[in-house]
Image (cartoon, rainbow over all chains, first blue to last red; front, side):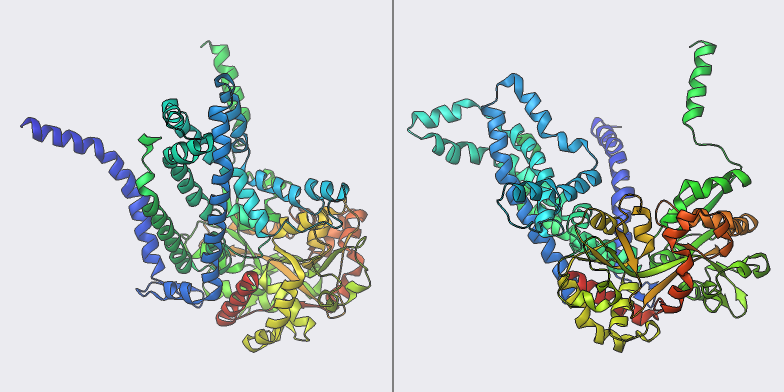
Length: 284
Length: 349
């Protein structure tokens, strides 16, 4: 056997476990879901067929269409707010906090990850409620005459998400920032750039990979999340994952749930395509 | 490792390991059956571990059965009015009616028309209650709650929560419009569309059991349409102001039943479990389950329940309540789909 052939065989042997893993845990389930999405519910029974009626319904039924739109709106809002909050926080930690305190600052930043997701969402429900600490404080000091409803609104859902994803983005942006040589800023300042111009024209573009990686992760996790809108949104508008759960848990409509899941995957794939040029982990 | 250390390690591991039982019984249940206080006496008496899986809504339960192999499940809890649906699809096994204590049941909730198909018993009712109005009497005029119309009056706008289960709430909206639950067909759904959307507009949230309890307990809302004793009873100790009533238009009677699943490999054990659940002791434990309370169907459970528990369950008022309550709507597949579409539309409105 030639050396090349042996190397090819060794390469195939090394890659095989990963390929088998992907085949078993992604390709086969995905194919099953795709097949199921082409079936339909006849009365209360799932009948295998090969038509696109579920997909047609998703884009013609106002309730289902709205679910996609609501999910996109919430996800865009959460991603934008989280980036706006996370970048300054990461920048402060990376450049203004002494190196020996940065680890502690990051530890505090990721504290929310240590609690259960469900518990965290229910905690927000108590904080944002009419008798929660925010409304009690605002009405107590006279800033509000009457409590304002936050709980069971989109604002509550967005708040719950932002709390979580700001921390995630802070980590990705921070890891990008600390790799930047201080010479970039010095060179820009030597050439007459103000401090604001250095941040806007030099630092910010250089942290774009960190921002986009975090934004993509936020987008994927947020648009696929069921718990936060379910607990904090009060079922006053349904997101795509809530609609999927409704098909599964309430209607027993597995074909429609599969079709909606494929739409969700398609949205995530589009988001990946739009951001893939920045999603190179080695640039972080 | 010395022998002594090994023994200590083994003893510690044994302490953490679940108790070993000779057999397993697999039950498809609602959350009230997951209470260890209910299951443990049966497990110990029969040397069996009861493995439970919770589900919500008959459609989901039937889909689970459809995707399971015969023998995967031994017993299941199901809405009494939906027993026929399960029998039609061959999911339930016949039960020996002469071995069930239905003679001791409240007659109104035996529901033989629903649990017996072609003269053969397939399920037995086990617990009942009402989907009606639950409210905080410290914040709501209790007299207002004597009519469903109060929810559409504007007086409680923003203070209402809707229980997130389409069958009882659509039934209640129908009652407000003078439509009996048995008449809630596709044409009737058109009539209740507008009142349903108005109710949503006046409501703060649409919530499941836990979120509804939280909303009432924290004062986020003051009225819950679709609520009842099953929701307020577990909160009674913390907040005695949480109350419920059946308004003049009526309320909905929910009745859950327990059945043996066709294909079970342990029919004797499954039957023993059903007999335990319908026995006075099992009934009392099920009635006061940590997940939600409800009236036991077996009157003999009154001898096991305390006076306080019976007062919370309104034991003495049942005759009057039962006379004013209607059964859940029993939609055919097409009407059920139309109901769920209307419900989804309401949620998205």
